[in-house]
Image 1 (cartoon, rainbow, N blue to C red):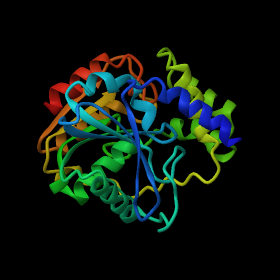
Image 2: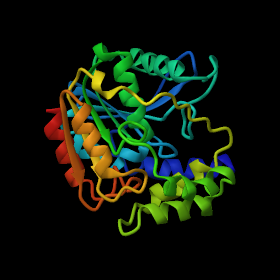
Image 3: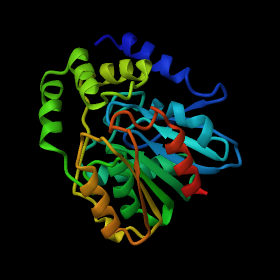
Image 4: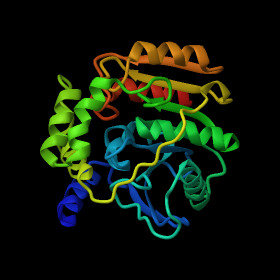
Length: 275
């Protein structure tokens, strides 16, 4: 995949963010991390972690609403496509991921923050909160994977061709299957498909987080029609294990249509919880 093709798609989605959005490159031992910053300078911090292949830009439809109150920091994930670099210390395991996120928060001078993640980013957000509970005020998990429920076998089977033989057409076909009826943004789909074919992507995973040990308020937003996992089972386990949990099922949503497709209810739920 020519890098300039990805860069054009990346810049096109970046243009969908509010005009005053800043792009920062935060130095870490693992390489420079790209962070998209928007919102009032004196706003309470809110760090946003995307799903795989989505980049930090995937919150473009949420930024204006969330940024009315919060200072947003949307991160390109280490090991994934985007403009976060992999230079220096090698990314090997969960300990590296949490150390990297420690360094990102240090570089942003955030002693504490609200933290929100989608999909793989939600797994990372929950894992990080267990690692550094003193740094997280509130935790929001948007259709988290491998947190309250495993992947559906049908989802993995559908994803396998695009994982084993990455191509834009396979990534598009997988998205079309999972997001049927929701009409995800075309600019975002183009970037997702290109990101899925980026050579050298390495998403590190680890143990399922012990959600019963989360000592902060947690909001779980689940997609009613998620094909990634069984929404009812995930909701039941979240309600059973979280000491300070609120669980909401978002009607009509699918896993990959979040967070940008029909974002109003998601934004309202997040703002009510984070406030």
